[in-house]
Image (cartoon, rainbow, N blue to C red; front, top):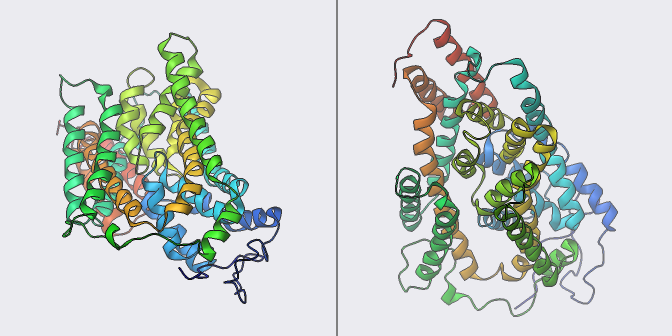
Length: 457
């Protein structure tokens, strides 16, 4: 295979061409020292956690414009590969995309700093709310300005599901429908344990990946693939881009294996300690959120039904849960910061920190575990086919969440009207998440003030 210079290294945030870059004799030339590359990461990423409203779909659009178009941080095809990789791993997909794109220039240190800058603003606001909000208001009798927040928050989840589903092909729609139907069944059947999602969700996700893998090998596949595995002999030698990525990421296969084992030890160890009856409130918090974070594929909204089963009514009421959900959706940065609100409401500031570390931890560790493997497997069509099926099943789980979250948050005619109006504002009038949540609060308060629409819906 001919060496192709697909990307050139950044110098002071710009992307100059390198002459004779197909020379494989010196992979490290023209790269800045790590400290300078980390400074580049800080300069490019520092404010994304302050402006990226709107959930995972909006985040991807913001990242693509900021990193690919404005700063030419990486090529668009590389950006899309990292997006698909994040969708196929447990954890917060937008956070993993932040980490992986930063790591392609600044390595593990650059990716970690980018993640911290990305998640810190929302964490601070949600933790503060968990500590002081219910010292001001009575959660059993919330003020009228909070009544419209739950249906507005669920309207945004419907919007996200619709946006994701539009991108599916024929086989992807079928996989999403199956995952959606199964997720509704296991959450609404008295004969099926409520915690069965811990097993069923991963089976649906990996089953989707297996089906698209098998479909891609058929002579006439049902799905749509950019390249079929039968046409893919893999790279004969590394491309210039692969060598540069390897140098800048700074991780080898054995580093990826270590990170994977670290994730597994934390998962198995925390579950084992809790099951053996080790009584510690913070261990309980960490185990619940770490286990959930290890099972959630495809972005933030999938965690909502799983976390609701874990924390309601043991830690808080349904109303408190949905009020926190609305606040989390109105914040910039990762939706997984929702964990800090839940943990803080239950156990104060330490609970908020432990919950956030637990929910964010699996995705953070696994994206670093996968980066060295991805850099080797990214050329292979079979790998891309598997990612396609994982994405489709994850989208179906979001659809299932829409079904039962609607039933819990829309309880009277006023809630239904808030849901419809906020859904329309977000979907067709391009209202962002903060504006949508604010409109939901305003409309809900109006109905409550005039005592309108409060018969059961």
